[in-house]
Image (cartoon, rainbow, N blue to C red; front, side, top):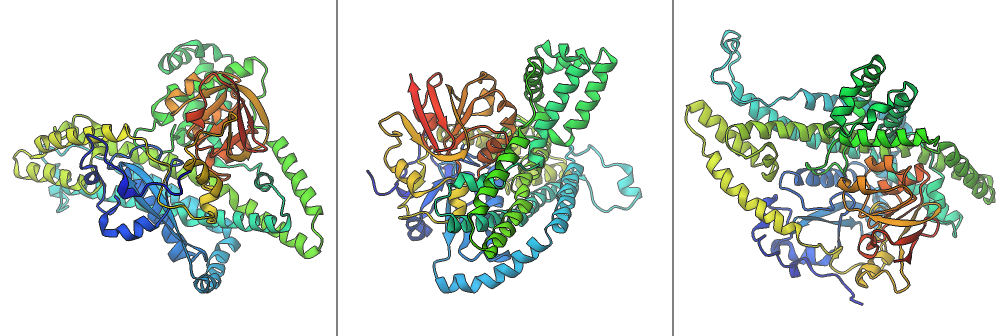
Length: 605
């Protein structure tokens, strides 16, 4: 077995991708300028959020997210043992490296600052969270208000008669800069609460591990289950629409093959019109929901790809006709939660320990909903709006011949877009032709070729020499990076010789069935009832298929990954972080998923 992963400086550029570094901000690629530092760190590929090659503009959210996460650790809350999470790009893929605080004296010095700052948020959580909801909705409203239109042949007369003193070209550029500023502001808001949500849970987790040395991680996670969070509301809206269709007897319209034909059929009756009215009420904001992680402009949003939500409604209608209860089993989950809490609480010997247990559990439950809620408001709703606005701007430049289509704008880095806009504006102002149509036509063809070559490359799961033991809790719980998983990666990932895989016991239960291996949301339609879903990762928007499948297996993610949390809340057995599930298991093989033990066994095939 190898004792380390390759150095980033040992990785070769795929043929045809030469010059890929130019597609990203100069500080993102690994560089000989920082080789001593970069070679000394352990880097892992973040398949939870960025499993694919990033287009140049899409890397914006990668940079904004990791810088914002880090600043809250290091500068806002002064989390005692942790600085930021460093980030790089290698051959178009995202690699992360948590940076810890090594000096015990520095850790101790940070503690009072953390207690003061985090304590203020914990003591005023409800008020500050209500304030956060107002801020995030206000930010979305401002993004929605931005508009990108082609520059006019002549300015409106009002520009002159109102003495505005500036024109459409200025507004076009200002709107883009404002959109980028809002994107960074969005990610500042994202981590205002998230780091503290994890901190409260991890404090409770640490208490339980000390008080009950043999307690499984899953038992601790189940103590905070049974929550009502906005992230599940899009799925609840689909169920509401399915029930309405059946109850009002317009479900027959869903026999039509396409969403457009279903809508046309519904328009033919009063009951159908009522259903469409409810659809409109549900769609905003809940169907601003991405089929992927929300970090790629190519992720399909329900509101813009109606076949996705209409397909889910159709599936729910079929279930209702069969008499199946499509409700989330929240009461059963809460009953199990309360049973576990009661049993472990009785094991505590002193009133002081019981009070500490109840206090830490109570705080974890108060703050935990944000751990999932933010995902809807940031990665899904806000990102959906921003991608739409960027495509609108791309359409303006495409109309002027700069691009072949509106999505070509994502082949530009964020700081190159102002250059293209300046070229467009200045030529318009002078009354001549811009250089852009020739320049970008040539350059974008080169970039497409590079990205195609990068997508053919398979990134190693990690780089550098791993630590003896992985102790950083976020790395373990969110990304699923442990000493055991790292050893499995180093052992070539054959999953063992007995047809089994090991991962995190992410959601309880045992299920057997035929495997269905998929790699993206585009393949969800292939999943059949009773199959076990095997995927690199799952998105929250995949929840509607959980009533169809028997269990879930993912390559990446820890106990607190979105896939793990959503599966627990839907009562679906799950094993996450298997590392090689999609490489080891084939569609059609019969497998057993043990969500209690964190094992996956190939039974047949």
